Length: 331
Image 1 (tube, rainbow, N blue to C red):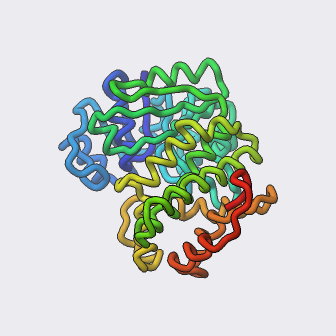
Image 2: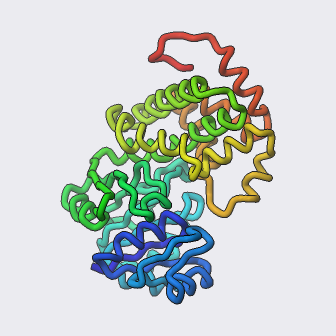
Image 3: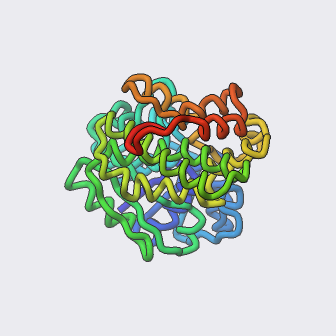
């Protein structure tokens, strides 16, 4: 099977390196230098320094050439670039091929999930999402992990499951596409909050409370939007939340940690090569909370920090002094 991965960041390159062991795989990079390095040196030093990629993996900076031969199209660009890349690829995609999103975000302006964008831009193509606690460096190093293919298509899902199943990477299927995508996107907001706790050195008890109450918030919003509550207790909810909140490889946790240490958001983002999706997802979460009449105090507090209305220290002081209700209610 011919597979194309659009996006040569850390996760896109990792997924391409996995699937190329059984399938003819091509990865597209917007940077010709990255594509050349993958082809000639079997490395991607910008996004995955220190790793050697399989010689079978090839790369190109030509989007049309990358898309035209694909029988499965995997989209691994950040949410803010997702629609534009699909728009440019649309004329070259073969009819009816599955399109899989790797992006864990929501589109700012429309508040849409990535599979919804696929359905808008490429109608008739089965849309799916690969999501879960998947830290690229650990998976590329061969460490055990689990992930989820979220798809409402009962024929396509097992086929995609077989494509992604490799070694110690266990792949599950889940028909709750809404819940899986929202879990993957919204946990990034909570990861910023958890990182702030680390930067402020408020202690593990406080961090555990924020993670747990954050899970309650994303579950409340996810269920209000049509997701299943059980999904948020699984790999694409709790599992992804734990990995993203605790891992030193997490970009969103890093942003929060730096904010907790007193740095400005613009400074933090300027030092980062890769995208921290939670920064763009936070205002979307607040808008969705307004739409569904939900308090979402952690999401709203993080939003105030990101826009400069509140310091990280004051944010945590405010959360600590909030009155406690029932555990099933807001913070």
